[in-house]
Image 1 (tube, rainbow over the protein chains, first blue to last red):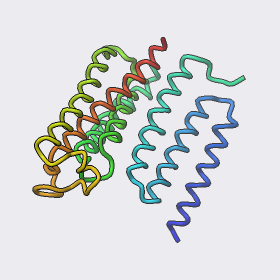
Image 2: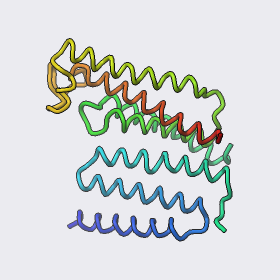
Image 3: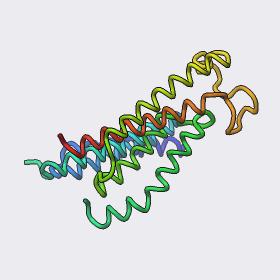
Image 4: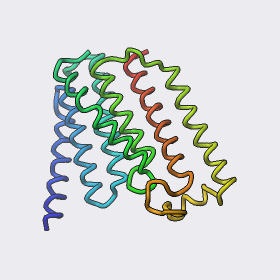
Length: 81
Length: 137
């Protein structure tokens, strides 16, 4: 029961953060929303008993792509127009 | 160069982050994780420092040579494993923890050494990507 509740919570957070990443005009906030989506997706992988995939997703999705996007934003503009 | 908060937090959390990556690489044949995941976590700790402080003192050429060294040491270990033990490539598709004192840290023949080589190679390769992104040319 608690398993099902945590999974429903994780899926709702994934959808909300993905929509926030799409619709936000502040690109730095969009990048942080993508990082949150990736982190909760790795929690979902861990709940589905794939800890290997969860580690790869957390390290690549939440850390490396965030670093690369932040570097790209620091070279361009922060706000979408 | 980022703000004071970003610099201090990245400097404080860098050792924990890197130590977790080294732990994953060293226990690659026993627990979930392994060469790629541990190397990616080490590379993301280096990327955090690079985003916060800059890339002073990191040579792209040296990292490229290190990546090639990791790759060739992996290939040489595959050759030695298949030459001296019974085939190491065949061993991947069986249970990984076999051999003398199974389940301990020193076990499974050349597979932990291969995992260390893969972790080194992945950490250097992803650091090269972030350096190229930072330099921007």
